[in-house]
Length: 301
Image (cartoon, helix red, strand yellow):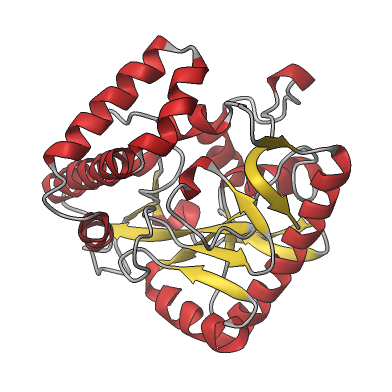
């Protein structure tokens, strides 16, 4: 089942009432992200768990030694068997400082990966149309086990892709009024078609609220409990279940790499990982190829 990647396209659209970050704002944002990573590492040490750099943060560490200079987010990963222990410790240590959004546990939360969001800030993206707890976020992706048996693994993949699409579609239907100006303002026929398909499917499955679909999707992702399985996957990653499925021995345990002021783990075969996600990961994109950082008002750090 092919993924309809509408979220990234919508985030790039700028309308009245949007904020495009200045260089000064981006620098301040990155400083706060590093502070947040430090707090998460403290909780990981306290809970005897390991955080692993993923996605653009792994690329940034490998190519730049930290956050990509023009980037505005951090992606971390954790294995499923350590997730509950880490979150429990983080909540105990930092509940007054952060909002902690967990799929299936945080009411109204419309993503299938957890987020740690800094209180006292407002960094509102298109995903936050129905979210008042919209502080500066770090995304935490769960590394899942999947089955050695090919039939069970393919069924796991199919179900994961279905629930990912269902959650996105249910969100589109719920937030259709808030998202309509961005879809219309994009000028993209492809985006309008994809948004219409998702909204229509979201209506068909609206007999259940989004929390129900998120719970089902999260349970599906965590279905394989074999911590020694040959394969692992990051079903909520940028390339989804099959595109982010790796041999455990190539992926875990990770090696250490510099990330700004810290040393963090990254996937074991870091070059293979980055090549799969980004192709020519050593190439520095031209300035006009870099993503603009656009948020909704009010924006404050």
